[in-house]
Image (cartoon, rainbow, N blue to C red; front, side):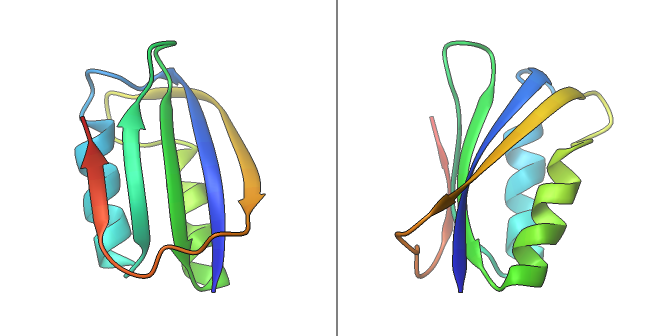
Length: 89
């Protein structure tokens, strides 16, 4: 199991990014959370197997249809989340 912190930049708020990401994360059996941040970006922490974490990160590079992702900053995180994926409001 591994855990990653993501900061997704671009037009990622108001385009159902968080709701779509939750569906993707749950289909990949990932745990973690996602939230909008005041800068207009989306922040997430995900935990799971290496291949599933990588698949989620790759999805984040384009997101849902209305999103315009310009950058995804990924950093390793020591703390692993065991279960559930939450949208933080």
